[in-house]
Length: 349
Ligand code: SF4
Ligand code: SF4
Image 1: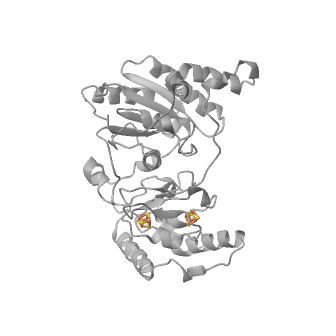
Image 2: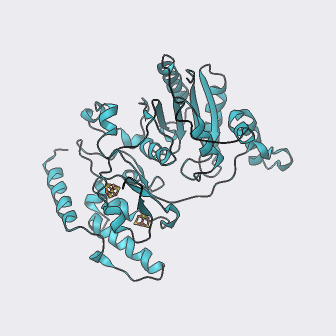
Image 3: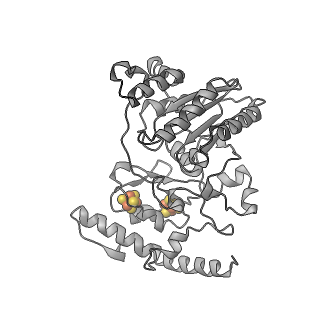
């Protein structure tokens, strides 16, 4: 049985933005003093490869988990799921700015319903994972108060995860994450250019920026449109014939084409500038609608037209022939989009 402590993991921002660094440090320093809380820092959640020690550490956390990252809550949750870091949805009172417009009924959806709209995740252990977007506030107290509330909420819970512990960092690797003060010190020395004082063993391995789709299985219905549409071999299926992102590094940097053709809006590109594609809830009147899908680009193109254009551009860049609408576009797709437009027209804003 695991204890009743909650583990808080701060996934750092890309780059060395001093304001973001300061917020991370202020939260970490304050939480080190909190009873009932263990705090660690890992590199940027989306950029860490599956075998990065930060991911191994996250996988080894045996109880309720709070992950603070510079991503939308939904993007963080499904990035973790992809790395086999799972749990029931822990509800945070802090919401990303672009997540706040959800319909009231939507907020009343139970955890179980929320996790059961699509094919769902597999092997979800009996614990909670809370994801919080660090862009919500510049005030560390906002996060510290919420973490205190979560720690309180979980103090009565006994979590059994003995069958779940899947990470295998060795003791030396673990030390980085179990001694956040040492990591913070090394990070400060690195940022100030005091090379002689950098304790390299306290720092996790570097990560580089990455670009790949993340699937939200609470929405995904396994329709396979994405695998038909993507001509770069990114998608595959597992032993249960469930869609998965198999060759993530085959994905073309900056291109979000398949997210536009997914009928369930289940494909997230966490670093895309459009909030609905980056994992904001992006819902209108309770309908799972991505407005960018309906209205396409500035020139009034439909989402499918935009996706086809983006895919053709990548094919040509790769020295292949453009295929236009001839491959991977379901006839029904345009009809579905027309139906959604009608539903949207019927809503009063
Ligand atoms: S297109 Fe969307 S709903 Fe269909 S399998 Fe792919 S991710 Fe799932
Ligand atoms: S963005 Fe393009 S390359 Fe990447 S998975 Fe989607 S369709 Fe394939």
